[in-house]
Length: 160
Image (tube, rainbow, N blue to C red):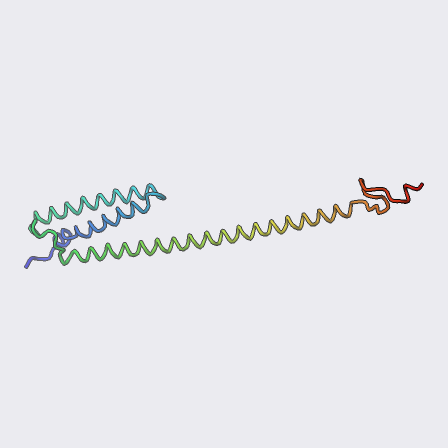
């Protein structure tokens, strides 16, 4: 039975690094449209994780922890690293969902405020229009005796 050392635990963490690399590359494709700088950092960090995973496999084979024939076996200590990567991924996904929900709620609130503002402006415009019409009607002289222009004269005016 091999002795448990920090070396053996660290050298078996390459599957966790490969999982982290895959997740970071997925994040790159998700973020590249909106967050260019963060997407590039995700891609670079994913490539670094792949390089570290390969290096850990190489150093693990040099130290005799595994051979080229059984390097694809996941060692018991590697499950802890995989669990940590999965937990961090789950936390980040839940934070992203929370952020998305908050963003959606803020957009809906802004739309409601804008709609209420537009409705208020429309009411003010309607009141101003009605007030202007009332003022115009009040200022218009009322002459009932004179016929409107363009109308035919009455019989009384033709006899005279």
